[in-house]
Image 1 (cartoon, rainbow, N blue to C red):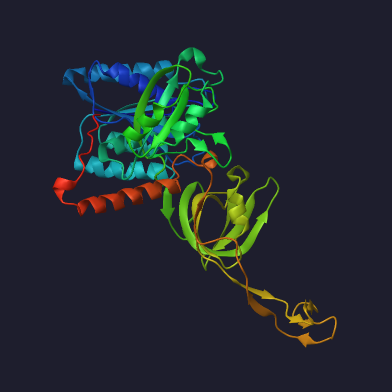
Image 2 (tube, helix red, strand yellow):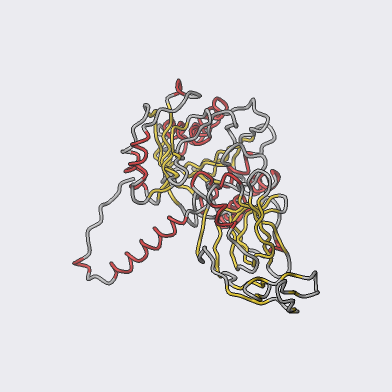
Length: 440
């Protein structure tokens, strides 16, 4: 049985991942977990989301088919007991997949990916549930069924890319109080190979612990279970009630859609290529904005104030620079998550030089004149200028990173692992190291 759950928390507390962690313990009576629990981040631009827009999926291999009804009852009673129904924006949904067909897999594979990249309607989830005879329970306006079905769909069909997160939860009496975590131990944990976004070194901030009054103490993200567990073992903190390792689509860039500017719609996330058509400007609030053109359409791109030092990179762009931008679109503006500078415009039109000084413009279209000798020139000169920025990738700091955005360090880890695998393949089998088995 696959169980999908969504929308049980609120901005003021609770967490769907904690509800799932509680359920994992309860459901051991009826069977064994079928793999990792899934933590699926959905479209980050949905206005109805509470905090991180996460949905959960659990797989359980039942001891007896007759226990299916008991599992459903246990899940439903737990949701009804723990979900924050008092919040107007909390609309829980639960689905139970007990059998599957090729058509169901095809439909859910498409639906699940759309839930990460697109904006879905409640009726679309209800139509799929009815079409395939999937058991479900929806509360209030039933919006949580979208995420619940999407998470269950990924559990059924698999994630195209994934990472891991170990989430540690607080004892109930500590909820809503300041978190007690030793900063030195966090910095030690942050150095664990295969992990990231535990500390924002540039801005001198610990970023793996939330500040909201929910049950989460902290979360450690990484490329493998062994990496996040190793980092977890180094953290000194207040007592941990329980901890769970989730398989997740976090830090995968799964939300990004390659497109042209003419294809852009609000509340979606894109990868767009083009040239800087208007230079960066800083507006009130410290936000930095430039205009991108792909030859047919233009779009404003913004590095907002929370991205801190990243704005300094954006300020160095010039008209004519060729770039690829990554981010979410809202109100006809792309919120930058990272940028790739492909090529730099190193040429600039400037006033001609005469008598050791720049000539003065005589007005639009009237040319230039030397103030000393009165020599005139009709055209500006093109000069090569030095740039204090280089082609390559640049990203926002961890403190401003969205859950789904892939950090550049992960790309480097993947490339290093691939290179290592290629090297091992060239070594005779008898010489290859024995890898330790990890039991799940």
